[in-house]
Image (cartoon, rainbow, N blue to C red; front, side, top):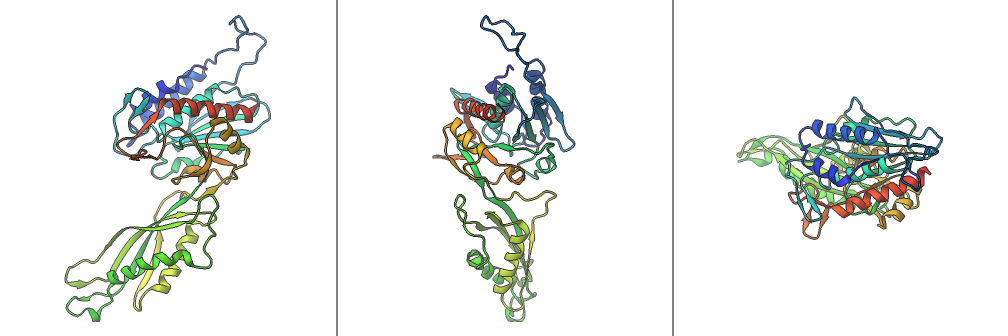
Length: 382
């Protein structure tokens, strides 16, 4: 099947998808339909079509009610179901496309249109001898993950590769990300007589210090060999309504990077219990998870010797390591062995790359990623 991943990537980076993914989704669907509608026939040694060869399965493309782009190549023969997943949305603001020799720059170049280009190349080029391969591209990974939450595979996958910038390493684990608001309540009073009230801002200061001992409790999850310890970071704070009044309420937001098997609700309940035990007299504490209609991105860990991890590592030449950010891979890890893989990097020696004004990906990495995924699919589906 004819497909140039670099031509596609250049078009994709020039298609903004930070506010609305419709145009980018149309580009993807049209590309898949065009490349998959007329597969190149096998040829004999003279370059002529070989009438005795079997034609690869064509591409079945659809967009579901959640805005996911789904493309399937089914051999019609019993075998594993491998899913390739990544996303088409990007963070704002849009950064214009440019190309400098063998480097493509612009918003989405590495997160995650570079991985998408590599996956489309592998999806279209691999010979599906048995089983099936599904390309599932979600519309809102950077925000609410409603697309990924709505995915329902039939049959369930036997292996999943999630496209993100990993520098061609195979990432078999990642911490989760939970967000919660801690609300501290005291009692108003005149600032001239502070002892007559209960200062919620001062109490919040004590409770911020108490965050440092949260992971010292006996029932905390044991550190993961791959991921290390979980982290808990306060990120924003607000409180008080008047400069001459003892504040009755203060709240702060915390960012939790979790390790298995901690759940969002388990974290919320444990933190509330811990902070209430540390709160001064007269102070109440409530911990509430951020509102969202989809599950939080939880931690996951796939054994490093799982077939998909081992095969992809051998094909890519990279190492097996954890991924540095939360990812929709957690939505699939309970279904099948799941790894994160792709060209580009979250950060380099100069600083942030993904989500940064200097976002870029190297052409050679995109091409190599496509080849490695194709080799992996061929091994799993042959």
